Image 1 (cartoon, rainbow, N blue to C red):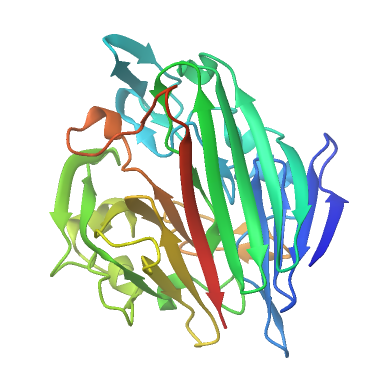
Image 2 (image 1 turned 90 degrees about the vertical axis):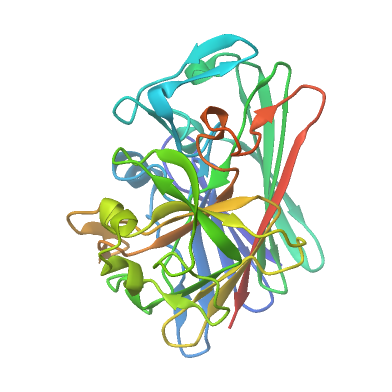
Length: 346
């Protein structure tokens, strides 16, 4: 394994690159504990499979969520408030009347501590950060570690760990955007997606969960074919839930299967690469860069609408406010642990 560290900003931000024996390079930054690069070597070409910028400043000025660790709670919390143990907690309203991705200046904008660990067939970077009691309105002093590992079998493994001294909410994710085209100027409409899921969560006009799990069969949200379904089907659909967000911005509930089972696969359009997803999380939020109304400069080119797709493994969004959406309460008596793997096949 090869490991390199380079400057990525003027405030201590670093770009940490891990390269395996197959010349796959995973680029990470302590700015937001984020994925910056995922470069695959096809022999005749190298292709960056994720969207990203070339400096920490660009993330701060253009899109701080891109590739970042998200928390304490991913997604929207309706009304920017929740009740826990009989007490109401008011959060920042940074998305209209709602709280999005933990609030302003959350995990995605912080500079994390990090440690590099090299092994024979893998290398890891362990990011860590503390979130003090009532930061952004969340109770409890929270300690957390986030470990990224690149293996010689071309797996990118993300291990989450957290501990609190007071009951709180915790539902983190990673917000990496994939684009498996030769150029990021191409949309992901030509990508196919498989998900081991029979239900998705519907949204209100304010893009909040309704609390209803809808059967996906017979809709553009049915990705349960292992050969994958074109994302374009949702982009051009007249189905109300697609039109609401101009694509996909929805949670999909995984079927009950062991961790070793593939929970999803993203297929590149030219057959050169696909990404398998493994996770112990109950759902994945699929977002397809729907809100980009003008091209964004990126790595000497441009990112366009529907130019990327996120596969955000997590508990169901806004679970604290919906019965039957699962538990995202973290208790001092038990640590939080979770694993997600993105496996490159090429």
